[in-house]
Image (cartoon, rainbow, N blue to C red; front, side, top):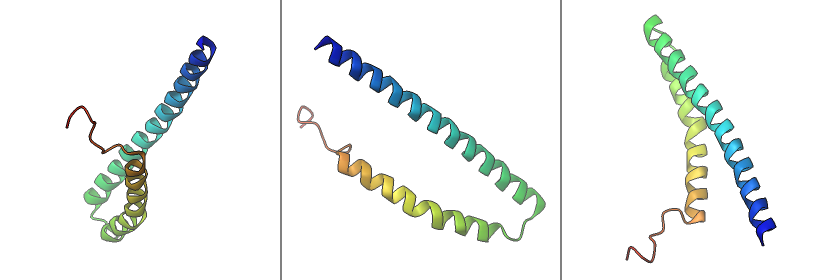
Length: 83
């Protein structure tokens, strides 16, 4: 039983490390896009609405996918103790 708990703890730390790495990359991506948008506003880019539309078309379905995944996990269910 103790070996199993150690294995699960090791797997959990690996998963946390991978999630942390992904979170770091996504944070860097958000900062870069923010800088790009700021530069576009500064230069008066005329293609900015097209760029924003493309971003919405790409990330809208991605956000919906991850929302449904969280709903399937039951993340929004109320605990029995709270009711």
